[in-house]
Length: 483
Ligand code: SF4
Image (cartoon, rainbow, N blue to C red; front, top):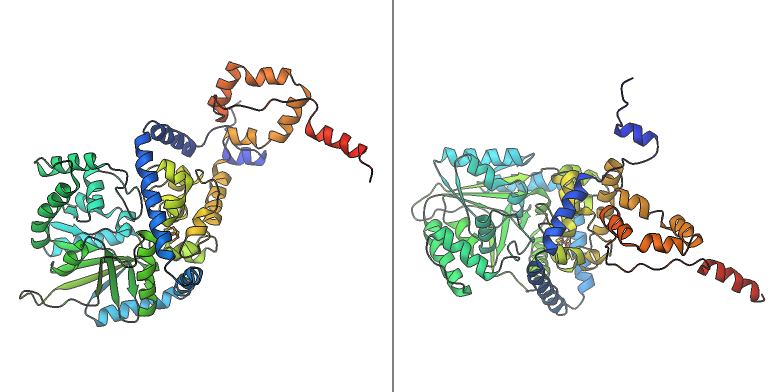
């Protein structure tokens, strides 16, 4: 007789989960083990996230009504998302009136193809970019490189991770985990000259290397922090001024904007321009705020083009899903990363895929799939701090719980959880059989097995079981106390 395959439906019919550890847990364990072996990373990250929290708190203290400000951000984002179809059309119409070309990309593949084809049509080989998480989301750089284009990130943090071949560690500070020494080494290798292990020397090297890139031929690609429907305008905020050069010098500028960034009016945009730096860097205003509605002639070049790629990539689906719709309210400030206790000790390469941190869990699930989200969703300890700090009051913990639920429904609980969920029943048996149970649980071999299979650290002190449990004693005491 052929052996019956234990398919998912068969174990589901039996009401249980497969007796295995899901792949996501194994990956997680491997990454955490690596992180624990590199405590220096942890020190850098904890110091940086604390700086972020402190600076934000100091800025918030300058507001007359911080909670009122948060609620106004929540309201304007919720209103915008509720009429997003209309706003996309209004924004598109006004961009076209301004002379820009608008492309609605259903997914990353369409957006990438549009940008690559545009560069090819203009015979441009170099793509100069400013920091854009939306282009990270669709993995624009490697795809453009596959099409023979050279991509150069011009934001310092983005350039560092580009040279290191890594993904962002933090939404706002992508290279926060890199030490000055590591950065100097990366730049020395890339520039084929020695760059001193000194902050000023690194910045000078970056400036000198970028100047000819800014002035030379190539296409500028940026993201957008906000898009304003009523005038078809784009707002790009940077602290280094690189986006201003990229948006103004090249003859062809492409903006990739996630559709959730569109708001109706300038009043909404101005409010967001205050909310972004306040929660992201703890400043009142970003150093450079570039506002663009159309391209004007420059240096005798009358036909300069502005292309706006409006990216959907799962956002329309998110909007229809009551569990994940609120994630579209995210203003990408990174504050939830700065307060999350597990992100603070693991960092964005463990607690994240391309979108890191607490809000990275629902975003990853929606745009990159459950497999990637499940690799870090279970790191969330449901403390709720991310919601407390969020400037848009997003219920991030509830969305994370939904992602965990989806994962457990699909892959089942790992054996450790299935055993530990039944701790009350196990404790009753162990108490009834004490002190034998204590010997069994405390001996070296058991501790090793529990460490290996249940994830109970072998050095952790475990409580002793007693026959005369508190439950029994309580019932006796209750009998002795008159009503
Ligand atoms: S979820 Fe909230 S705190 Fe986190 S990045 Fe988005 S807006 Fe900021």
